[in-house]
Structures are given as C-alpha cells and as structure tokens.
Image 1: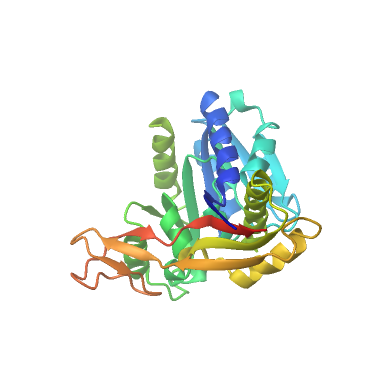
Image 2 (image 1 turned 90 degrees about the vertical axis):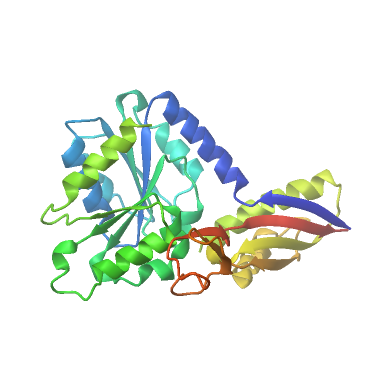
Length: 216
Length: 113
C-alpha cells in the first residue's frame, strides 16, 4: 500500500527556526547567519563588525564549530556576550542548537546577533536557523569560480562579503567576472569588498548592516 | 554529510505517517530532491540502513526523484534548465536569472505493508 505524504523534509527544523525568529523578534534582536568555507575569514569579519558597531548597537555572538572554543574565546575578548556551539561532527548549525544558545544569552541586552556557522559552502545553505539575514563571506584566495560550484549557497544569501581584497595583487582573481556571476545567480544580492587586515571596506559593510537592522 | 540530518528528519516523518496508518512495515520511501541540494541517494540509503535498525522501516529502500535546477530569465521570461556553468538565458542572453526549481526536499510517499 502506498501512502501519499508530500512533506518538506526539513519542516521540523523550519518550525524551530520560526520559534527562534519569534523569540528574537519579541526581544527586538536582529539575527545574521554568517556562512563561508573554512578559512574565508568568518571570525575576522565578525571581529571587525563588532569593532565597527559596538558603540552604535548592542551585539551578541553565537559561534558554531565542529569542535573547540577558540573562536568564542577570541570574540569574548571584545567584551560581548558569546555562546559557543560545538556540533560534534555535524557540518552545519541547526535551529534547535540556536534555540539552546538563545536560552543562554541575555536577549534583552542584545540588538544584533551575529551567528557564525560551521565552515562549509554546502550544508548550511539548506538549514534555516531563524535568521533575519543570510550573509556569505567569500575570499580572494578561494578563487573566482566558487559561485557556479556552490550555486545554492550563492543563491540563498542576502549579502556577500568578499574578504582578503588586500591579496588581489598576488592572486589571480577576476573581481568583475566574480561580480557578474554573483549577480546572475542571485540578482537581489548585495556585494561588499573588504579586507580584515587593512580594514578597507569594513565601514560600508557595517553601515549597510546597521541600516538593514534598523529597517526591520 | 548533510545527508545524516536530512535522513534523520525524513525518517521522523516516515515513522510518524506509518504509525498513523497502522503499518507493520515500511518497504519503500519515495523522495523528491532538487538537484541543487546536492543530496546523494547512496548516502541517504547508507544512513537510513543505520538509523532504521529495530524500527518498522528496517530494510526500507530509498527511491529518489530528482528535480532539475530550472531558472527564469528576468528580461524575457524564458525558463530553462540551469547548466553547471554560465547561467546565460539561451533565448535573449539575459544575465539576471531567478531560480524557480532545484531546491526541493520532500518525502513524496511511502510504501507500507
């Protein structure tokens, strides 16, 4: 006997994500899901964003990693509330993990929640965690051919931050070609070019993020 | 690797529906999977074999119906199958493309005894 079901496989994850979204909305928290491959500079962008915005808004951070708490310790030095999630082998954050993290953060004291996902360009794209904004950190040394290799990720995000532009003189990377490809795959996406080393481009990115947060 | 989470979520839906139908055994699970998700059938079956031990779905086979990645050109409205590289509209060479399918992740049906 065949039973028709037609149910979204990730429905359970989406339901908890909706609860996370509701909880954060209640506390007027704006959540940003930051995704990238390992080594693209997620933590560096988080740190630069904190430094650019910590006098303008109250920030909280959730760090997702397969193992270790190195990133959380680095962020904690900035004097802001942070929770580390270790996924224990899982390659992405899921909404139930964020739910637990939110219960351990002072939500009334946070306006902007930066959530650093596990380094991976495939799986995080599929799992909604209750964020208001999805951001991808790409980086110059990874090469300009990544959009067509990971179309779901590049298509899903609201903004792309191209990091390590200080390396452009040394690495073969076609910025115009990359920009065109990104706009084809994701017509609505905003693109920022930054260097966390020289701090070039950080201000326009931080300013845009703050404006998005305030327009919610 | 995302196949583990996806298989776990899928199995929860399957067991719930099978229980509702008072089924004694689940023999087949039919999935609809968008090509852009990169979900691999062999990998889902591998995790399913482990996760279904001592459940009524033990030994169930997964059957996957792929949904091709389709795009729609914003300029001329042409829909076309998205190639691996260069999503240029084959009709007007437009470069602004909206993805209209390929992200699906559904349990379509189950076969039970």
